[in-house]
Amino acid sequence: MANKKQTLVAMLGVTFGIAMFILMISFMVGVNQFMEDTMLSSTPDIHIYNDIKTDYSVSVAGDYFKNNPALVVVRHPKPKQVNLNIKNAQGIIADMHKDPDIVHISPFLSTQVFYNYGPVQINGYINGVNIAEESKIFDLASKMTVGKPEDLLSADKGIIMGRGLANKLDLGVGDMVTLTTPQGTSMSFRVVGLFAIGIGTIDDTRSYVNLANVQQLLGKDRSYITDINIKLTNNKLARDKAAELLKKYNYKSDDWETANSSVLAGNIVRDVLTYVVSITLLVVAGFGIYNIMNMTIQNKMKDIAILKAQGFAGGDIVKIFLGQALFIGFFGAIMGEMLGFVLAYSLSRVPFPHNDFIALKFFPVAFNPAHYIFGLVFGVITPFIAGLMPSMKASRIDPVAILRG
Image (cartoon, rainbow, N blue to C red; front, side):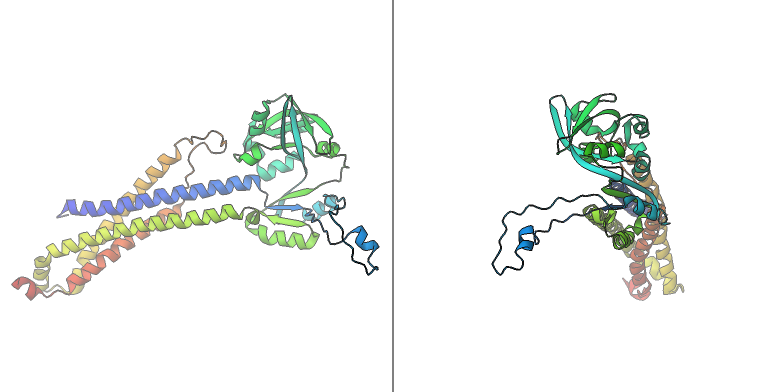
């Protein structure tokens, strides 16, 4: 306390270092969590479908001339007609309901369609679903901007559209829209709700209707299902569970991590960048403390010499200056965490300027106690190391040489 200004400067170095660490890591973790939540809101834990691969190695002509030694060349072969549905889908679903790791199962039928509204025609997709199960997997209720998912159950040929798609077609609740398949069949639906996930490729192209309506539109029976979405008790099990389901049912099973590997890679890069920058700030603050401690010891050389001449041991000198460094580090870290929390909370209350993101009203910020514990520990360890080196140097000085000048 003899040199309050110098102590305050050193303490502020730790304070701002810790504050910026808390602010940056809270914001970046919040961004990663938001992106992962948005990704999971449009991607099931596991997606099962019939992965049809066209095989041109076998042809009718090849089978007919297979015993003929002549060379048979087939140009522009036409692939045979195949069905994309999952065979015995109801049996598979009933069997998966017995799995304790599976919480919800939503079978659906998806097809490409043209949305017709007057002169406007837009290409997109329609999912025929059991809306109750689909809503449990993707939490559609929280993403509805108009209406409720249950409105689809009470409407005859109702449709829930993405908000971007509805805006392009200038449609609102109660309006009629005609859907046409690539095969030329058409059916009219009445809009009963709008949703917005915040991903343009979904909000601008996707709609939901009852499963039976799509089966009727495509001229298929009630057992015709092309895809199955699955939600697990723990999505960390998705990769292993997908491999297990692939082996068991022999249908393509994609887990959410594989389907969104590029997003997860981006999260890892941002995490590493955040920790590198944040720790750099703390190390810089530590060097500031080192410089101040070094200057303090240089200015106190004669006092140290007198103390040692009076019988103080080298360890006592280390304790004196190390105590000063820990005092600066501890109280600087406490003030830094308080300032960091205030800055992070202030950022979390700033409205997000992009109104298209219905799920993001404010900037995403994560308040994780582990970050504050890490900041406090690092804020104490860094000054400890910064103060230890000059303290050890001070403990080894020769008091006679100092007093002689």
